[in-house]
Amino acid sequence: MSFAPVIPGGGLTGWAFLSRTLAAQKKAFATGAQTRGDEEYFRDRIGAVGSADALLGDRRLLSVALTAFGLEGDLNNRAFLRKVLEDGTLSPGALANRLADKRYLEFARAFGFGDLPVPNTKKSDFADKVLGAYEAKRFEAAVGQVSGDMRLALNARSELAAIAGRSLSADGKWYAAMGSPPLRQVLQTAFGLPSSFVSVDIDRQLAILKARAGAALGESGIEQFADPARVDRIVRLFLLRSAAAGGATSPALSLLQGTDRTGLSLSRYA
Image 1: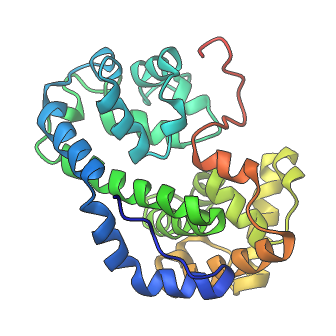
Image 2 (image 1 turned 60 degrees about the vertical axis):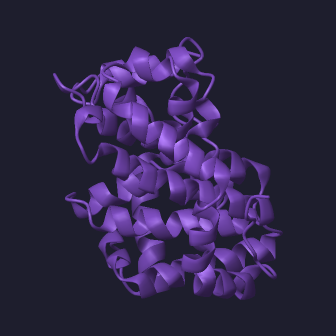
Image 3 (image 1 turned 30 degrees about the vertical axis):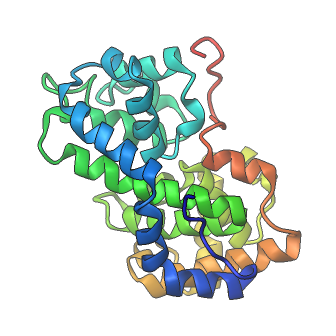
């Protein structure tokens, strides 16, 4: 039997327990037969993958790759994924650059099929990087079976820290956060913004988010989330407001399953 995450309660109580036991629970989860088997399969075969078609032709490899980027819901969208991967990221017109959900951009950039003469799959450390993310995302998904809010919170904790450390301008970091649907959900909820906020002009969204962050946290920049204590404050705000509103909704969970491509109609690629 696979290990199921333990979260004795919701809200701040559940989050405190999960945070305190996270390392031990993730270690127990990683020893499960499915996780080990998938990781061994990926490690043995990914080095031989030299094209988008080769990746798309191996469903098990593709499943691990997509899960690592929180895009497992796109497993059957082969034509769309081929376009994302083969376009690469260097051209402004590349599909990944035109999508509002920037997880696709990170996915395409990580593999490098459309950007590099020799893709990143040939690098000796590539498997380790992808599998580290895969383990984290699979654990988050397992947590989501117990609590959607806890899954969103875990994802936000890792994403905020990662974006805070990126070499981007202050506004660029905000746009990166806004380009991640699950992270956007956490921020909007934490700052008391409605779901319709996504339809506001993008520059206006940026101004509002910065103002709300400043009012709630004393600082308006994403770079503050390099401090784990700051991340914990925003997560706690999210959990409190989400609990007051009745918990994570189905749309919020769909964002974590890679099924929402807000910002561009892709029916012709699906």
